[in-house]
Image (cartoon, rainbow, N blue to C red; front, side):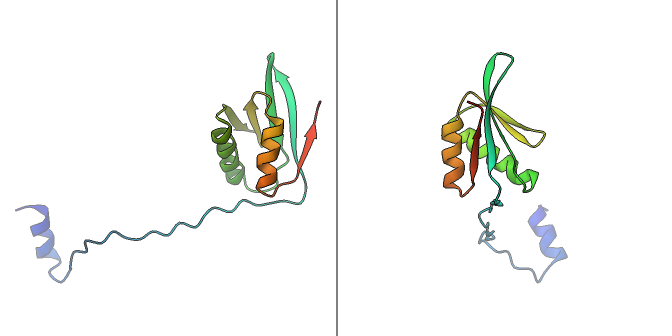
Length: 110
């Protein structure tokens, strides 16, 4: 006796549906703030880094934004202590991406 026969005995009125359940996913909306996000350049351990800070929304939204920036630029980076740290000097490209999303940006350092 296989599992489907056992289930039929337990639930005789149940009809098996062959259609997959439709799961509607709404696109995730990021919180767009009025204050500008700060995009600065630093050298850490002799290597150039771009640091994005000043986001007022949820940390999860900022992590999603960090992942999107890293994948679009094909660079490494991390989210740490409320800042996105990107390996390399990508201030101009990052500022352009953020402005396309509706964020205001402010360039700091150099």
